[in-house]
Length: 381
Image (cartoon, one colour):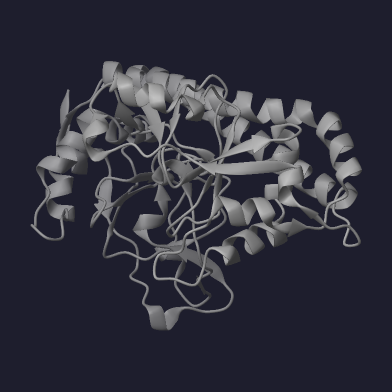
């Protein structure tokens, strides 16, 4: 049956929080842009990612979203969705750019079904139709409340929701496993390989070379995938919206920068300078200029051990500063001196290679599951 959104739940917003109310402690709060609506590297779908601490201990309880509330960005990047889950600590949301769905009619709608409906093309298109503004797009609570959806029976909703929750549970599980594995690889390398009494150039462990300089007229709608700086996110590479090239001549020239999964790349310029990305297992494509492709002297396990070290990453980043547009030279990277025991590094490389393989397998599985989930969303909604 067809229902207006306001028939299915209450629609409103949380208490507005101003900069002058920021505090050093209390309950954390977030802005709409910090909703992670889709997996972006290690940022897991349906999560909150905050880059700076903001707290408030004085606000009323009613301003705290409850479990199963849905929060939707309503200004700028419109339609990003977050479903509040039971594991969330209490938090506030700075509104003015946020719409909240809460107090569901339990006889008509399942909260998870509503979440997946709004994330689907059907839901996103309905939201897009009520956008207002030219320079700054926005949606209003009034118009949003009036959107009409065709809703199946509650039992059917719950069955559909269960399918997508299974996908999300596995994706989130893989991401948490990878976080733990990366932390283990980082700490073990620091404990057993870092030695302040040793000094070697980093090219004893790996070298870096900038990717192929594809031209502006090489880009096409279809073709082979190409990794750009924008795709490097939080220690992995996002395979969403990759650029493509089908120019056979250019691809032949770029064969040195062809990758098949498991490689590590590093951003050599711009705001993402020094960020690294692990390519998922079974990925095939090419590396673009300004992205450094790493060539290991042992294996990528030791490369990752090196680049997970905060001091080494900070030193790398410092090599690229000093101009309006920071650039990291592959030559400067290759010659950088690090405090590493090379023999201990070789032992680490052998001992932990299986953990690195597990990381790239998990990355690949998440990409496959995410793609399949999006295809099913289009089928069910």
